[in-house]
Length: 88
Image 1 (cartoon, rainbow, N blue to C red):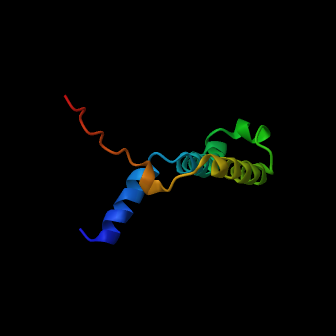
Image 2 (cartoon, rainbow, N blue to C red; image 1 turned 90 degrees about the vertical axis):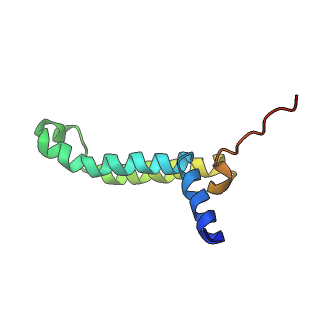
């Protein structure tokens, strides 16, 4: 495996431990399901405001801004490193 492929693989493995990626994935899934939920349950239309996507954009912006302060490592550094066995 070449060096750039190894580095890319480490970043992909580290992405699983990233709060920002999980946050954005959950928000994206929720926004993707919102129109379907409104079609399936017409009674929800009265509870979901017309500006739901604008509100979601603000939540995403604030969430990513807050998570950026929490993040201090690259994705490659988030991969669990094997712990060497203790010396006898």
